[in-house]
Length: 473
Ligand SMILES: [Zn+2]
Image (cartoon, rainbow, N blue to C red):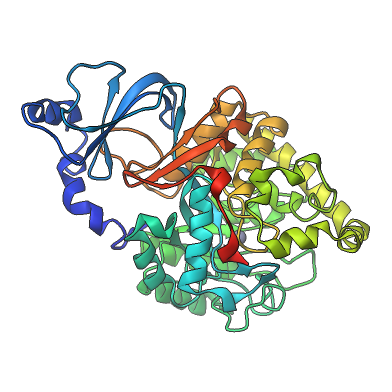
């Protein structure tokens, strides 16, 4: 089970009034009984057009109490709580806070990366950036330092410290293999690297005991350059994790290990398959098992697209997400030339094309698609921007409608991590949402028109034009 240790303690005492009495609880009933007295601490947002994580509700009123959505009422309802703070958001659009199932935190600063940046301040700076860009829940899939548990508790107790943090602790990799310690700057390597089934089980038990939310595996030979985790190791790790009711998400690049991981019961394939087209057998296996699939389209594109100087490079929405040192690097002609001349650039372009085609096939086949970007793992995987670009790629190049993409990044992304308290704007769920000035259902790029971000019933960020990434430089 994806655990939420202590994270919602601050909310839980009051949250239970609305949420813990089960699905039969009717928030409207609780509301009606309260109308005879003046409600303080209640906020009503009127007249915004709301996409609730599943569908377009049209213009409604959101009633927020104690950090939760208490009720979604018809616009103009005459039984809304008296004395509530009223905010008229006519002409605005509200979507649930976005959920990223695959990101990283505390691994970059300016143009540098490595585990030396895994401090609470740096993790919080990353999570404030995700939050400013509308991502209110982030799963950090591995390479978290030993302080992960403490930092998670501190961050999740205070919405002003950033998006809610969950994750996989260090994760489980391969000796002298993925994730490559030298390339990733892991000088005090937090990744467990078991050599056999017994040590794999021990690593999973140790991470479970330290309170991780899920188990991350890396199963990748890094283009034939490194040893790959053996089936003995990953099968034992998956079995042990499941015996402890923990989800398992696997980093892969190629089809062959992905297929065997699905056959071995992995819960989430955490990157797109990028070496070849997915075959019908694997599609069927994923559908039967209910395996989740997170394409991370942007991961390969980010390796070259900024060197290509696309016309959107200078848009404030991207520039605001970049530390000054990264902006300077990307403006440097020598850096751009060297990037584009690198033979790896064509490999990354090809990988994106295969990833897009596979995602399109899986969408058509009805495989469960989650949402992730790998943002934060390296400086060019830009927290916040990467997520909006991923949505754009899904719609423009993998055949998702804007509505389908929004379902993926809200309710389905939450369900993929077994969250039942977020990802949808429904009575009893967290009041985590984004206020937009333009309609994301007519153009997915309108998810960028962020006026405000709310988390646990508080406005925590916005508008996006005011965001300053200084703390990440
Ligand atoms: Zn990753």
